[in-house]
Image (cartoon, rainbow, N blue to C red):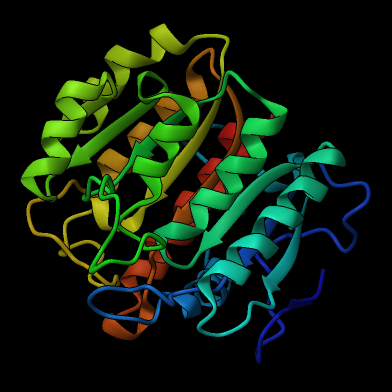
Length: 290
């Protein structure tokens, strides 16, 4: 697998120099080939890394320091521009390699479709995996404008692979009527608009299970994260998302992987989106990697 650290050569703050001894691996999936509104999330991973330089290495929320987590930033995958199918195959193949080495995967997107190949590899290793999906959008379409490989489809694909009863969505406030009907009739769990309170109610039901956590930055209100491809008014605050990450970390879940996607830095000249994203990644590292 060929990786690129971009023009800056930067890695996430306190990344260790070698992958082999690391317990967790951060990797970028710089793909936005199917963006339906505003492209640019392929630049998200590197800007999150750059923003991480401004972070403190200690989390007062979790009373942990990044020196306590052995992780390696592999950089961004070299994905063939415009070729969604081939890009997804590359991501899936790399994920198989990473899981075979026993590493905790923490992916940076990139559009949300990149979660789909990761889940396919995760499911092979953890057949009983459940997914916690935190997002503004349902992502339950079967296709978009006739294209089945779309950033609006990954959670519908996950329902087909894992069983809808193993998919838990939070913060959803946008989608087609048919998507909400599917959620209601399929047996999946969907919490509309809110994240923290319904999440706290669900976490005890998932105790002991392997769980994959996928976070779309657009679950935040655009006031907190304007730098995303499909911003959606009426979202949660950065504080609530942090509290949600901490609730997962404090639970009895076996979090076996996670990602944060859809940061599109070109639409946020203040850089608050990538600054927030880097803090979420720090808390995920400290809270999810045991």
